[in-house]
Length: 356
Image 1 (cartoon, rainbow, N blue to C red):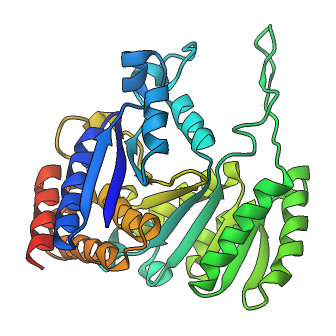
Image 2: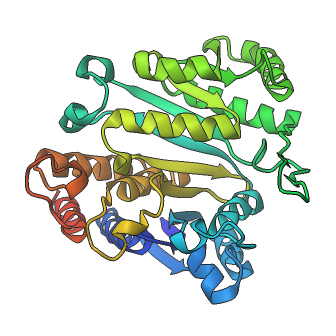
């Protein structure tokens, strides 16, 4: 199969982890006799520095003509610490999501046996956790207009807007994923207070009968946040709006024991994008110490969802699990043992795949 990929390393540790992800991608492609081609482009702070635009037209054109997008991270202290900056790296991420029609962020949350002891929750709560968070990406408060501040700087306002089309497509996607899993969907909203949430619940109640083989339940977002900590194994597929999903997926990520372990996929109308969830981690940039596993696991998601190559994705997961079992890990999960460099972990995984 021909694999045509757009590569957006981005900011901070993005270039370092992307290098290892590409090494894994190439090794898997060679092993399974795929023809891999890829091209890099700028996004985020590095794009602002080069072009003045956090998501340049050339980057968008590359993404549109590619079968999938591998994305590293966006963000820089240069802009985080300047509240008056007119152009910010994160604007590039929002523009990319909107321009590519990336309407659904998929975050699988699985526990790794070798990391359970590092979870902030008791082992008996997190053993066997296997849930999927599906977050709507292109609507809600992050995109609502109008928004702004008063001239005196004492008042600010944002608006939360959702349409039937946006809600229906994300809910249908959630049910399709649930049918491939344990057949349970949890719709998270705040329908007792917020008008857009009431529309979410109304439409969910209309759609649920179309999937009679899938159990549906409804939770207010505050209750869902509590249950993620108290009873994470109760969830199968959790679907929600943009702002709630942003918060809940970060909460769910720490269940695994390390933020550096979780990949994600953003499903789009034009192409799909695959990225780790941990951000740009500027404090570690250039030091060869960051954890590359979430980026490498994002490659596994890419093979599985963008190209429907399940065996390739499974081999990458096997290699990642093997590296953790062997203690070939970076300092964030070394837990008193030897901490390996980012590049050493990547090289070990490549060698494992090559020799398997």
